[in-house]
Length: 501
Image 1: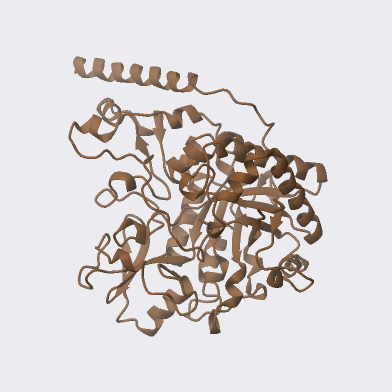
Image 2: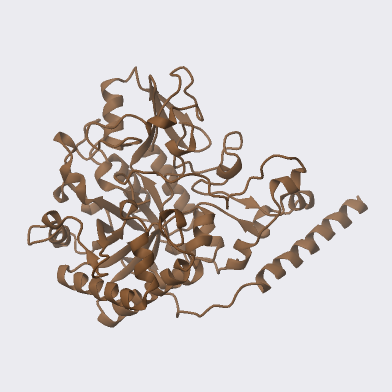
């Protein structure tokens, strides 16, 4: 017993030394001022949760009952509506309108979306730039050159003024990503871009919000994001906590699991979920019987941004209103992680969204409505999300119940709200008998009366988060590949029609 006590004491002292060393190693950077004030409804001095709704402007081109227009948006369920997308011109380096016929003019999408405020005066209407289809090369080139950044910032301000938007959302995918045409200098330049946009918005004085849609994989953050500084500048961080799996991984799986599944999630995917904890000093901490939240950690998911130095109440957790689809290698082998025919590019395209590898929620529920015996409904009991399959088609998705679980998690953690990609993929016509907009209604019910609590002080630093700890090989002493969530776990998806990631 005495030997055990000494061992525990030694481990505790060693951990304390490591924590001090982590924090002492924090690099010094310029500070860009205090955290910006919150926007939106307040109660007793604290903000009510954000309910952020991305809108795919191209949804109007879907055929038949899939056609979705601005008048179909349930604006009363959202605090923020985000028009997706505009782009960046590689000629003028200003805002590039991607669909002028659709977006511009008195009856164009920009003005009609903003007019929703007439009946919903508290609604914030935002314009998003970027998205998967825009790539990253132009954004890297623009951010690298101060003159090009100035042209872009000036153009953004002009569009904000002309169309009376309330905010601007940055969906550059992703700063620093060489596989997306980026450069290692993007990390600094993205910070400068955000700083310059923030300063320009402040100079106008209209209270415009500045936000960003961001990834949750550690290697992406290390490549392109000064997390702590960005979170001081931006009004909200929209976490793309979806597309965590897809056809690119080589097996069938859900794509927005909330927790790690020990028997399934291994190697580079071990900690890629909505929220997970991964210890650097796992063996040491367990031997000392010290609670795992008390030492230096790395995280993927929502916890990752907080551990890198982002204040908790600025984190908006994303929920997909679509599923990731696969073509099974054999219909009889249909469990989680079943082998797939990866070379076909995913599951069959839907009748309305027409995208290989994804289906809107309304398409999924119509399938289940029309063939309830054929589409077998199943559930990931640990990841807390449903999946379904029929024949060689397999879909991992969200439903209203899984959305509720995520809203409960947001409240439990004290995050700033929930976000969806995308509002137009819900069952807005009540085709499936659950009421109109069942997914968004679940998000709304979970967030409508949630007062975001005062966040705890930031105690972890970027240096702690970037610290390289022992690999699983170091801990196990075997020859297997280490589980490192800072490895690039996948090739990126090649479709651009379902989400901003």
